[in-house]
Image (cartoon, rainbow, N blue to C red):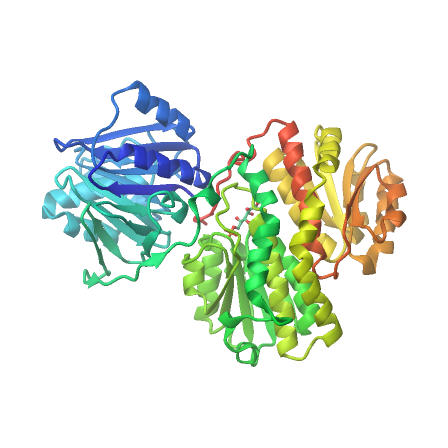
Length: 612
Ligand code: F6R
């Protein structure tokens, strides 16, 4: 949520800031802004409500901002509506210091009121402005910028990643981090800060991850990083493996479509390093029996689509491991009283590795003595770093706000984990294990087969895109799949949609079915297909229009009951949802396209939710 980029070099800063902001825009797109310090030491700021293109026009139409050092921000509003004044960077009343900030300052009102009593005049409604006003206040008193920065950090409560410029130090930028991601990028005679690695891909691949409590002073010639006691640190540098082209549209109309199409490759990259000689290998786990020793239950904790992966995992892991598995929403988990401790394994799933609720759940689990295993896409992200074990999905950068390839790779990896643990703990028959291994190898190819007939999904989308309300129904793994299908549709097309366990419908919701209501009936889980069929008949007899999704083996049972049928290849039931999600993603995509929606940047949303 919100994106930060900062540059200190020997060339103009603004083009680099704008390029970084463009790559970060998926993190928030309510407003954007940049600040630089010019060669003659003037702090200059330009910011505006709306997309980055509005800021670009503003910069083109007025005097461009000059200077070899600068900070930029793209905002997802929390405190204060999206408008020009609330956009970042924020500047203190003496116009000496500018700040960009991600996160929330929880005690901002108390600080704001005390500064107002001291005569400080605020111009925005944001929590961020207290940082910069307080900084100027302490800087005036202490006349040392870093003393002032530490005084501010000691006073504020909450989460922050921030970049600071001060016109008295025209060659340097200061950064600070707590509970919101921030990294340093290294170049030759140029260095960077960024909230997200994708912002830097076109500039550098060498980065350091800042930890909570650290501050940094960045100039064109070097970077110094300090711990909370102001001791200079030797930070490890990491090489980013992602390629810049992976974060570009590459000729596709939308990132979402590109990312859907990348799924065979993303799944292949996730599977193949973990298959050797007919076995699943998970070197990251060292010793599986050690990991599972004394474990009597598993919590899978995540948000949004990653939670839906957890729902699939609940069905699969319980079947494979014969212990209770619960899928939990991270935002609820941390405030409930889960039975944590040494006998609980907590699996945290996150594409970004920065989702605040998931991170908080992870910390809570560790605090209570549980082992935490994370499934994460972004290397070096906070959740990856803090978990006891990390399994990476090799999906590459995911830019579209609605997740697709991260979801399929998370699900594939979670299922592989379940099968791997079952094998290590002698919980799976060799014959079934061999079938799963073989089908894992074929999975990328089968995903391609499902995708290679876009006409089917386009046709269904153009028939139904005008509907106002859609129900997804399914049982067991199909129910978990329906949750994701429904979320995909509603978030990008703004059509109201709900997902129901098919057997639950008649306990209330079926009263909403009337002639013409669209029901997407998922019947790919073969053990329950007859029961799903009965549920389809029930909604049909109340006038519903049905799109059914099923496997090629049982299509003849279903097709007479549906107006449209999506047929997917039959694979082992645990792997079936990996194929099943593809038609649902494409259907949602084409519906949104027909409705003229902003598919990659749906309203009110942002990628990577780093506030509670
Ligand atoms: C939906 C979507 C979100 C994320 C959720 C968790 O398309 O993308 O629901 O799945 O915000 O994000 P991560 O996986 O980054 O923790």
